[in-house]
Image (cartoon, rainbow over all chains, first blue to last red):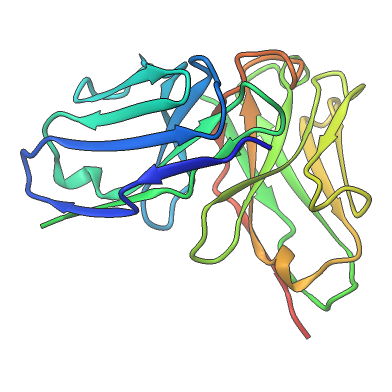
Length: 107
Length: 124
């Protein structure tokens, strides 16, 4: 199975800050990577697909980039409603696997 | 509006069985592959199983293969997960999730809609 790692595991930032999360795959996954947001007590929600495409209805402050083994997820201006855990997920090889998550808090 | 509503979660003894269900609405259920993804308490997401839109093809994580069976009834717009030989490590919230295509293994593979989850607790 392809192993996914994320860093940092958690972060605290101020409202308005730029937040960046990295995700690394154990082997080349092309751009077959998605990002999900999971707010406390809620189900995950798809934000970014195919590494850099914004899902319909998702605010434009969220973005993604990368290909191969290294990917980046960015919140350009952190908002209070962005408090959540963010997961990357690869699908280049079955089974689909998720990263361990990055918990984002407001400082 | 696409909606997925899981049910059937319960407290079960180790070695026991349980079936959880997911009622779907707001889309043509038979046209999409469906999946189960679980989340142990305080942990991350783990893909468990998937089934094609036609129910012809199923897939399982190694951790549940031979113990869990995924199925669907397209006439009832319902997805199922039969869990046998339950272990403490199967304790988790079980989410059903809709996939983008009718065939699970056909990219792109993204979970574009999730239910609210149902809690399965395996304990004596």
